[in-house]
Length: 423
Figure 1 (cartoon, one colour):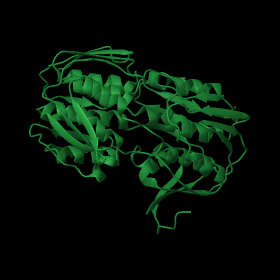
Figure 2 (cartoon, one colour; figure 1 turned 180 degrees about the vertical axis):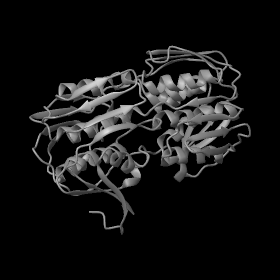
Figure 3 (tube, rainbow, N blue to C red; figure 1 turned 120 degrees about the horizontal axis):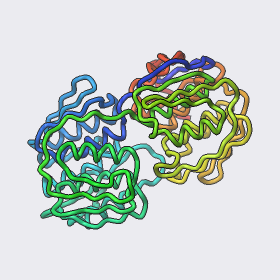
Figure 4 (cartoon, rainbow, N blue to C red; figure 1 turned 135 degrees about the vertical axis):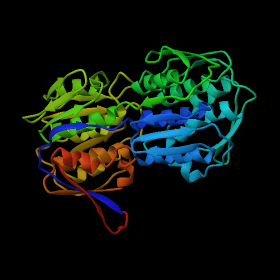
């Protein structure tokens, strides 16, 4: 198996340009099924999730061609497919293909979704929305069966502003007959990027980025070329990597407004943060101070940055408190950070972090994607060598993270080792 070996104690310095957004790319790779003409997505991250999603499209008859970080998908020959549970359960956003495939084919069958084990992530909002749009959706034997004579516009209210449900239903509504309104919609940048992509294909959508989105269905979609924006979670991760190592890191080619929550918390902790129209720089000279964080839907503090932020706060002066309100099981990083010398207590979904002066290298195991990123950050700042196992989780969201961190001066390498017994 592969592990990441990280020699700590080196300050990260320099500039870095992150890859395209994982979450946006996966949303676009669900929506491409709507179009009967070829679509080219540029700046697609070459990570395991995007490769798996592309393979899933092929199982439904799409033609897929990679050219570096550009991906062309031709769904003109879309047909019924019967993908394996393994291919669908590998990534949660496979389920977001249900609506677009249904709108094109009239019926579709998909195994129940998977993804990182960070707590219950029910698809009730997705299913109820599709049912309001005229679909019959059943779950039997771990597989979803959906059929519809036609998809029709509907008024949909989401009990929670789920980004996944908003993206899924917005995409499906593009081919619906009539107008669809999604109220209490998610306002994440990923939703806005998806709307931009759908509009580039000819869809008419208003209100993306607000709590009410209106989709005027029945559009004649055309092929297009679309660039996937920078990954805001990667941006946050590399800014925190600079901060935890008392370094000086500038992230290029981004939209700083997507980093508002993270930037404000870094400043509150005592970091120097400078912004331009396309860059964010973080510089830390002294020990950071403890802060309080509560994860919230956008524009609140993003849940995907909670775990890397926890790693940074293990070395802050004082007691930090992190309250996770989105997922109930996003705490797999805690025992591993404690193994490295952190002082963290859990009370339900709340983590109480008493800052320590030093972390020490250890053998740790990533429990999910962002937990893996958190352990990498801790390893960068720890004394000695840290070995991070379950690298496949990290590979789901970061394209060769060892190269990115090494380019900034970190000592990180991927090593093949013999598997050992799970402790």
